[in-house]
Length: 289
Image (cartoon, rainbow, N blue to C red; front, side, top):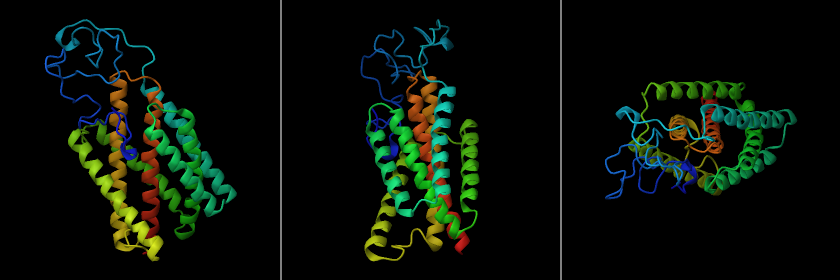
């Protein structure tokens, strides 16, 4: 079952605490009792190999069993790369247009609000919607183009530095994940979930103090505290990327439907946007000091 938390709206967060429903405990007397690979979340009801997410046949190949043919229409890495490329291209083109047209800050923040609503709608949908995801990417791009221009006036070159930093974080997390320096398990997932919820609550409180009390609120986004929370935000974004990589790996391994590649692209885009905005704010603070 999908999480209903819009922050962690990835496939694979279960109500029972297991990741991707792969760690859920089998029911007593079930056919999967003792099978470490049971409970495939993408298995078809009529699939005779439904209890084996590796779809290796009646017995796993490591035990010498026959191999079942691959299910058609399953998600591949190429699908994820293509959809992610399309989604990020929409973000970049919209951001470039907003920058070139010098859109007012009000329009930028309006686009950001629409993007947030679209992101929440997709997060609560049972299935990925390419139209909603691409619309989110366009409005998010408009927002990023406007705020990038604002930060560029505060710290010249900050947007390009943030882009390079985001690329470096993505590459670093990918290498760390592939070499298993980062292991995404239930403990890691719980830690990231708790840290993200705490971080968002603190930022919300800071924003409310800034809106109603004026000034910098509690100071979580400026000065020394701003630098600390900026670094924490980037680290959280890196953790989100690791969860996205796990989602992609599990989806390909367990034969997720091809449409799930849009959800993977959506998750990767959310994480990259998060990292970019945190780096943009962090670079601006460092340049002010």
